[in-house]
Length: 307
Image 1: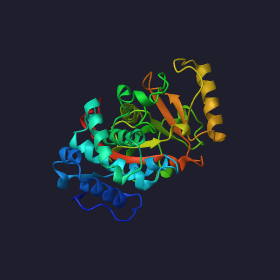
Image 2 (image 1 turned 90 degrees about the vertical axis):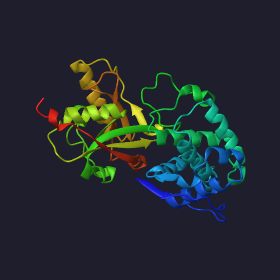
Image 3 (image 1 turned 30 degrees about the vertical axis):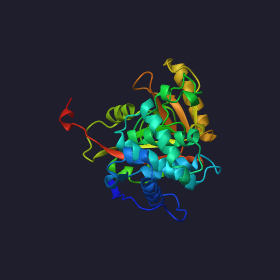
Image 4 (image 1 turned 180 degrees about the vertical axis):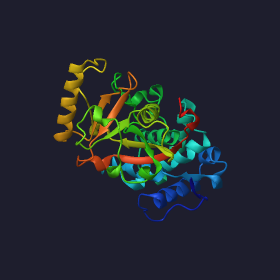
């Protein structure tokens, strides 16, 4: 679903709050800038739309930046990301980055952010709009101080994505009311938890393995994201599937859940070696910081029900 059309207008005379209206205003401000570069990469200004879900992403991502970055300074970066992603067709390469930096220089009256910080906002927004699990490392070498052994993909530079397949009726409820399967491998049945996946492919595989094709209600692939510090990793070797190792992991997972050690716990996927599930603890006080983004219909071929 697409939002209302955005038409060029004069810059906003007053500050606007986060959300759909504030981001729409910021996009109009960017479109109104007298810039050769902005005019070049936005030849169809009146046909630019605000994608559904993007205001929620921008609002949440801005909240992760801290009080030193105001919404008034951040909003033009998110607006530039949304507009340029559509204009460039979602293809990011060094030449695109160079043009974005020049465009940002022309937008200086709209924001006090220097390009290195604005770039992080733009790239995180591009990753969200593209549905990418991570940004190409060679395009972000200036900030690339991340562990090469990290197993969970990152959404942009600040967020960790997670995925789950839910019935349509459940997907529209708050995450606190969701119910999943798969967490019983790690936790007692009386311990509330959600089983998420670190990749969309694993989320679909889990859904097929745990639910099959029997239910007629449509399924949705739901994307979430959270700050990295909300996640910890279950100790132990992912390749050790012996009963003793599993018993120790179950003990550690139960301790994690009961002691509210973190919002999420990364555990090895039993369905796909090398992949990871994420257990989410809805009893943790920071569970509300796990943000639900978009939900996409999952097309299942029910002719294979008998296989």
